[in-house]
Length: 228
Image (cartoon, rainbow, N blue to C red; front, side, top):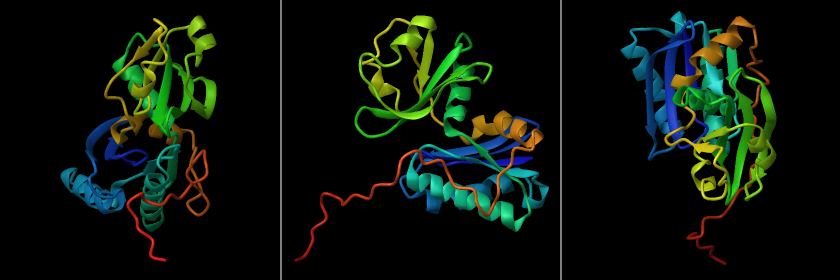
C-alpha cells in the first residue's frame, strides 16, 4: 500500500492505494489551513482502511508546482511519516496528476494541458501526451490569444485544472477542449506513484524539496493597518 498526499491547491486530499489502484480516499476544500486538516484526514483514512503505518510500503506526495504553503505542508507531512516509519518517499509532479485526471475524464484525448492557476492570466502548465511523453516542459506561462497556437494546429488539446477556466474565453480554437471539475487529487496518484516505486524513483527524505517553479513572494494584506 502507498499513502498519497496532495496539497498543491485549495483542495486537500489523501488516498490509500495498492498495486496502482485507489482503495480509500478523502478530500476537502479546506476553509482552514491544510496544516490543520491534513493530519486528521490521514488518521481517519488509516482508521477507515483498518491499516497501520507499518502496513505501508511508501509515502507519495504531490511535488509541485502549486501553492507554496500547501506544497510545504504536504511535503513536510510526507517526510515526517516516511522518516518515522522508514518508508520510501515518492514525489509525483502535480501537472502529471492533473494530466492523468484529464485522460481519465476524456478517453478521446491524446494531448493534455494541465493548468494550475497563478496570478492574473498566468498559469503553471505543460503539455503531456497520453503515453506520458512531455511535449512542453513545465513552465509559468501568461495566456493570450496566441497561446498553444502551433500545438493546436498539430493536435487537439484537452485543458484541465484550476487554471483552465480563466483561459477558456482566450483560447478559442475549436481544437481546444476544456474540461470542468479537474484538479489534482490524491486518488489520481495511485498508478503514478506505483510506477515510480516499481522503478525505484524515490527521493531523499533529508534533501527533497517541492518544485515551486517560482520564488515565494510575501504580500501584505490590504486590510492590515500599520501603526507608525
